[in-house]
Image (cartoon, rainbow, N blue to C red):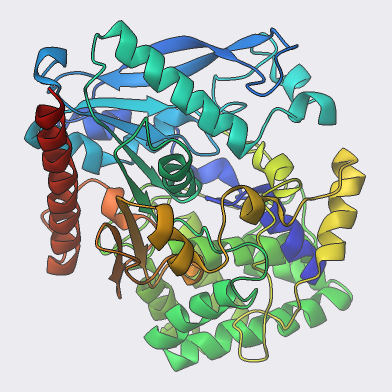
Length: 495
């Protein structure tokens, strides 16, 4: 099972980081939902971007998409601020639709909103927009990296400011998950372009053995165990029961019926990955209000999963209990009649992360101790390297991120040369174990929410939001206000 879980995480982070999510139930769009609020509007633009910022002998370019909202912008004459979202490993519209915080604070700051799509994702595909060519081999994919992406953002922002005659308009960057990592790194690498960064759920310490490879799954374990000891024990014991059933005559057919799997395909590994995905992403998106980011989910979905497992109506049938939990993640709307384990569609364009995870984004997350809700396993770099060599013919560079951006002795180092970064982490988010969880200086601030999940602070607000979440957002607004006040004061002193 260990290799299967490694491969699952290799496909995507973010993510989102995101792993190999069965995407059939992904929302195709949230446009209708959000436009009904009257909050979401943007125009789509394209910028002719340099393919290789670090090679003067390569004249190739590509069209990079960015979304722009100027409804509340105070204009260049007033040096009104520009808020930029540093795009993640997927379609920029998807992240824009799920970053309501920026839209909601734009009127307060009279800010221009810009959402930049990451190269090789969405519609920002090099080689004439042909994904088949762009993803064809290690030579073309070699231009897909965080350093190239950061240079893209700097180049586009500077050009946009020039075109808007907004040279003195301050820029604040925002990002969540991998996008949050990019926001923090952008502030460190391009301080002349941005005055500050809000880096939400950014696991910048998940490299170079800085963070334990057991951290990720330990937090998931605690999320479920904290809700119900029985829930935890049922999930923990289910993997062996599935493995044993799969080995018996007719066992796979029994599993198929138990979990309502479509008749086209089933295997033990595919079923385990399907369940693993449900538990991981439910923990990540354990939001206090209903959400539609990965799949339609109720408020506090971990609690709802455990309620399904603890429901006495399911008796002693472990498979029925686990099915009830998985059904919360995959079929909360009740529309699915069966689940297709052979659906490898990718509606949000996340596939490029496999390359990034095989080159620079080597983030150990699959260690499981004996108390883990998942079967025991150890992080093995050689297995990652073997996979990457097989798929792409490349050797990962596990030390590159800490070489390029730092990470070791983060508190001491950033005190010396960093400033104006907010690191938000929710402790129910499995990625929070690799986040910055304490203040580094007066201007590099850690906001930690005990009940928070993956970049919950960037989501649209709701009247059902708990008090702690409202306070987190208020604090972020106050900090950004101080950054801007200091900037305008220094600008007046210069002139």
